[in-house]
Each structure stands twice: as structure tokens, then as C-alpha cells.
Amino acid sequence: APTRLWGGRFEGGPSDALARLSVSVQFDWRLAPYDLMGSRAHARVLNRAGLLDDDELTRMLDAIDDLEQACASGEFRPTVADEDVHTALERGLLERLGSLGGKLRAGRSRNDQVATDLRLYLRDHVRRIVSRLVELQTSLIGQAEANMGVACPGMTHLQHAQPVLFSHQLLAHVHAISRDIERFQDWDKRAAISPLGSGALAGSSLPLDPQAVAEELGFTAAAANSMDAVSDRDFVAEFLFAAALTGVHLSRLGEEVCLWASQEFRWIEMDDTYATGSSIMPQKKNPDVAELARGKAGRIIGALVGLLTTLKGLPLTYNRDLQEDKEGAFDAVETLLLVLPAVSGLIATMRVNTERMEELAPQGFALATDLAELLVRRGVVFRDAHEVVGHLVVWCQVNDKDFGDLTDEELAKVSPHLTPDVREVLNVPGAIASRKAHGGTAPERVQEQIENLRASSDAA
Ligand code: ARG
Image 1: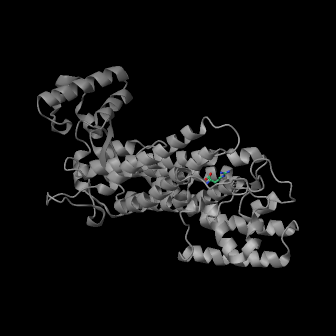
Image 2: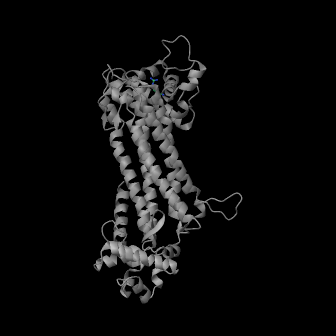
């Protein structure tokens, strides 16, 4: 007979259609290790409450250990007749303990159990995600350090704007990832609340000790309101937001790598181990890692929007709709854990074409702002300086010249402000070195960022 947890008041079993709709074990089996952790803590609390004697506790804990091993080895598997992970594991205990296995359900409902399991699962996996994020930071910081001093075109609107250090640009991505890490760590403070003891929704009449259970499971406290505890999925939605924003950051980095690796940019060359070929075009070297990072962000965003939509109309407390919280969360976890090592490897192994970047850095009149600011320092009103340099750019375009090609006479013809000594600012290293205020691209500021980011990344 199928092991249903709720057979008593029913005369017939569920229809096939209901059973197929209802079953979640094919995905919530991921919660098995956490469900068993919760069961251990619950067995101890039942023992302290006098509801399980010492001998029963010992047998119960031995059976849980045995079942845990059988799950890990694959010897114990859920069957299609097991509605969910909780049902499957109760079957495992009943197989090992006979009727004693049924005692563990006292004072506990799948409603507080599933909320607890998912918190444990996410807290555990968020730690793994943070480790992978730190590795990506290490890759980016490593490239920033190895290429310290290399200039590249800094862009707005994807147009050459002002030259910057390539390291400054790489570190911009590291800062975004630092915020992601902080968000996950801050999320954990709110996720670290234990729903166990809330029962189905109202708490328990049995003398349980939710605070002790919470502590045993590594939570900071037990939930203060049982109705909130079984129906709150803020922790999933918040996790998915942090995951989705991380996905967006990886997508933006991925998009940059696609550009950098293109024939038009040629800023970097991907290592063969992190690039793919074409089945028809023998010359192709494709940035699939970067593209998958970009593409997979979509599914995490989808999981966030999907969950918020599921939650928005739900009355208190538990509703079966809440079963829909899990697949998106698992997928977000697994997607990040799949994407992050690949992106880290791509970044760590890419070769930076420093000559090409240095050559491109001043192009497109990227030093125009420097020239205008020099005129301002000499007392010209910025509006006028902007106009003068604008004219100079047009003159150069018409005559097919760059700033560096201009003679003294040509400068003077555009404006009397353009004396020969303005050339002192028309060089990339000078332009970069002059951005030395806090947050700027000057080498000493970038070096400080490397040190600060490395320290905060090590501490994460
Ligand atoms: N599989 C369910 C879920 O994921 C477990 C809780 C079921 N509780 C219930 N009363 N039907 O939400």
C-alpha cells in the first residue's frame, strides 16, 4: 500500500490525476539530508518532553543514521508512490523501526517541516554560492593586478568616452560581486529562523522546546509566530532576488567578455579550454561560457517573478501553492553553481591584448575632456571650452587628423586658447593619472582598490 501520511479519514485512495499533480518527491528529494537533520533534532526534543524514552531515542537516532547512509549511497530511493520527501523518509523509518517510526510525527507537521528544510537547504547552498563568488573575485582581481597600468577605452553608450585603466574596469565587476556577497550574508540573518514547533499553523500542545531545536539546527532563534512561520516564504523570494541580481551581474560581465573577444574589439583572447568551436566554420572561437552566463540569468529572474506571483494572493497560512516555491529555488542554486566556476575559469585564463587596448585607448578623441578641463584650469568658462574642443574635433574629422597630428598653427586657427603647450594633457597616461580623486582611475586609486577588495574578499 502507498505510504500516505493522511489516509485515516479517506475511504478511497487519490485518483491518478491527483496523485500525479500532487507529487513533489521528484524535486524535493534534494531536501532529504536537511529533513533528516530536522528529524534528529525533533527526536531529541520528544525525548526531553517524555514522549520518547531513552531506548526509543537511541533506536530512532540509529535508524536515522542508517537511513541517511542509505539515502547517500542511493540504496534508499523515493518511489512514485511517495508523495514528497517527508513521506518517503517516514517510509524509510517505518521500514527500519516498525511502529516506533510513526512516533516522530508527534508535534510536527509537514508545514513546519518543509519550511525548515528549505531554510536549511538554502542557508547551506548560499554558503557554497558565496565561496564560488569569492573565487570569481579572485580571478578578476588577479587579472586586474597582472594588467595593472594597461589603458583601455572607457565607454559610455558603447562609444569611446575617456581612457581608463583596464584594471579599473575589471574591479568595477568585483565591487558588484562584493555587494552580491553582502546581500547573501545579510539574507542569512533573516533566513536563520526556525519554523519547527509551529506544527501545522498554531504551535503544539506538546511540551516541545522550539528554541532548543532551533539552536541544534544552527538557527539563531525559533519563529515567534507559528502562523507566520509556516506561510512565510520571504526567505525564498529574497534569496531569489539576490540570486537574480547576481545573475544579472554575471550576464553583464558575460556581455563584456563577448565584446572584448570579438574581432572588432580584440581586447582579449579566450583560452582554448574556455571557448568553443563551430561545427561548420573551422576558424570560429566562440564565447559560449559568457553567453550562457548571460542567457541563464533569464531563468533566475523568471524564478523570482514566478514566486512573487505565486505568493501575492495567498491567505494565511499554509496553502499547497507554496509547494511551487521549490523548483525555482533549486534551479537558481544549481544554475549559479554551474555558471560561476566556468566564468571564473574564463576570466582567470583569458589573455589580455595590452597593445591593442593601449592603441585604442586614445582613439575617438577620448582625450577631449582633458583638453577642455585644461582650458578651464586656465580660466576659460567650461561652456566655451567645451565648444572650442568640439570645433577642434570636427576640424580633425574633416581633415582626417587626430589630436596628436596637429601643428601649432592648426591649433591656433581653431582657437587662440589652443596654445602649443596644451599638448601636455593630450596623452593617455597623463589623463589617467590625473583622475586621482577618490574612486578615480588613477593607478594609485586602482592599487588601493585591489588591496581593499582582496581584504574584503578574503574575509567573506
Ligand atoms: N510537499 C509539500 C510542500 O512542498 C509539503 C507540505 C504539505 N503539507 C500539506 N499540508 N499538504 O509544500
